[in-house]
Image (cartoon, rainbow, N blue to C red; front, side, top):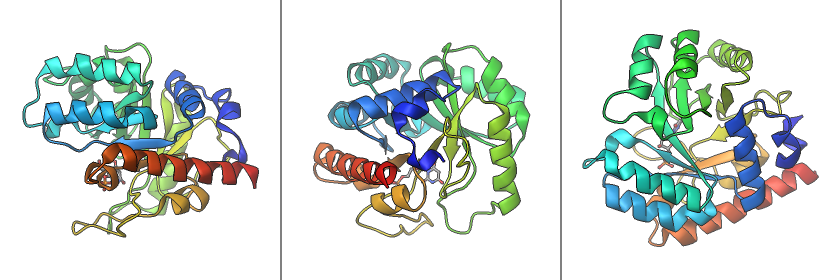
Length: 260
Ligand code: BMP
């Protein structure tokens, strides 16, 4: 059962090189926090990454929301990730035919495959998307988080969709780093990482259908390995301090879980 195994043990079971690296970062930095840096300005993004860097295992971006995006941003961003030992994670949620995804992933303005070792993919369009990510040009080592469940209220994902998504994830062990979901799925596959967005201490929801759980709930009840926190940290008056607080709560909950 993956919930009671340590990240150290699970790193050895990971079949994807990036998930193995992620497990090691989590263990070494004692953090399961991924910050969603949904910020509209490049300078703010870099400053923010530098400040929360020491406390996170991954920085999740939506690179296409930047109002002043220029490819020159990517080198300093990669340097910050390297200096603080966290992974860049572009939450592109690819969902098109394979050929289009190949272009969206490796071409265009953002050339995601050249700088983001981790990306998200919808299972909706089938295996062609995963084949495209696997064979496109870009970084040699890459990992995919497949989206099986969503935190959004009223989403149309059915039980069968969830089941088939897990099946698809398990068919691509060398590519799939983990699954984005809200419940403890794939318990018998400890090499995969559960990523859980919709985490916040202050609010239960926003006014556009987002739903939140507390750090304790996502780790101890919902099976989260990595928790994604966005506005809980970005909108705090002291983001570094907030990130440190989330990191501690999440890590204590993880220790409690593996010791139980
Ligand atoms: P926030 O904590 O500010 O609500 O941000 C959540 C982040 O996680 C957003 O970047 C969103 O795109 C992402 N996300 C989510 O909220 N729910 C999901 O089911 C999947 C996501 O990727």
